Length: 500
Ligand code: ADP
Ligand code: GLC
Image 1 (cartoon, rainbow, N blue to C red):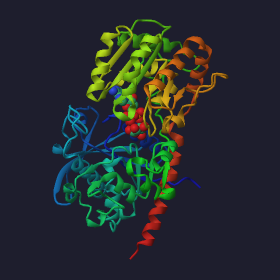
Image 2: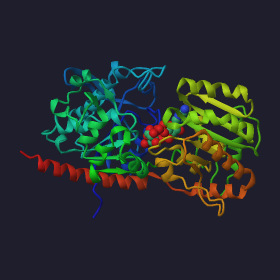
Image 3: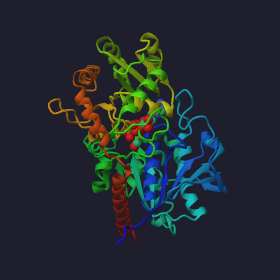
Image 4: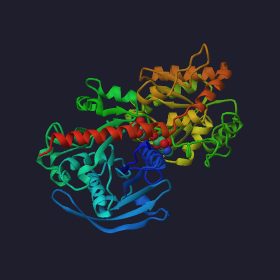
């Protein structure tokens, strides 16, 4: 019998290439596309951010005017639409006041917008309105992170008896449990969730409102983005306070590893690179290394070991550990460093000024830059991710495919995807360390660098093995289909037990 095909509505605050600050954007784009290719009917709802307004794609008006009833207010917006290949339609919620701003979540000084709870509550409620006004009857609504975590609450209250939304099951994917959307109770009446949802098993949290916690309580199925991280955040005392609520889901909380969109991240076909390469012929990687050295004003050399890092400068990612260890590393080892990222002011300042102190040996770019991120993945020998925690992580997956060996802390998705180097046999795909300390980072970079110079055959062997790893979306998409089945049957059970 053919597999059941679903109508799936994704709701998210990011999706590549339209709006991206991190991995969420890549995941929503890659997973929705893969599910579309697999024959499901997939639609995605996103905010119409300022940067999207300037795009040249053929974005058309779908609904010129839509009214969205919030708890104590009425909002008016328009809905734009773009049809991408593989059955994926993207809807953009065009609300000038909420989304026509410079940033996605905060202004240029990293200050979160004060009205974020309202902006994303509105997005969530608007997504349901699009289904009603636009005639899309989803089997599943797939929510992502706190920004869309009110939807399972809306489905269990307002839309309980709705002719078709009342039948939709909800799935909530937690990409980052550290961000929960916790706000003062003053915002609650706008959300329109009703008194029945302001209880400790749902959205109430120490007198305030917690979007993600309520989403976990109400969703028919929940997952995070690797099995290892799923185990970590259900351990007692973990999960930033959510461990008991996640554990309460019993079998309805899972870990599903993120995939990679190899149409975008594949060194043999990457348009950002000056030369393609693959596992059989890696000569193009040397050309990329030279281009990287030129782009970051490093001394040109094929034979020096280059280490790169890309990401958000936040506590989670452990860049402060790099700050502490990098100068001893530069003192003791023959390496070059390339850093791309933005975030904490202090860390931006540190990496922004380091190249001037180590000319030819350190290059940095403070900000966001897609082209440079591809060049770093291709041109480096090693890629550093000293994360304190990592739900999945995508850069180590990209690094593997680009034959750039990951040096990672043993946590969450990093542990699930990188195999520790075995010095005896030359097996493995990268280098791992346990302690989140500058010392452990120094030692492990030292181990990688000495392998580079002293055991080049092993480095070749590791790189070939890394490049052959397959983290394509197909496998994860099958696991999501299974989660969708689980959500639909959990929803049927819930409906039966609450039938009047
Ligand atoms: P997270 O979502 O926690 O930031 P991931 O490893 O899952 O971490 O994904 C990060 C994604 O964002 C990757 O695609 C990475 O290349 C990209 N990225 C992060 N910072 C930058 C930057 N400054 N410039 C370009 N791409 C970036
Ligand atoms: C989050 C996590 C990261 C994950 C990404 C996409 O931002 O920090 O580990 O890969 O979401 O799921």
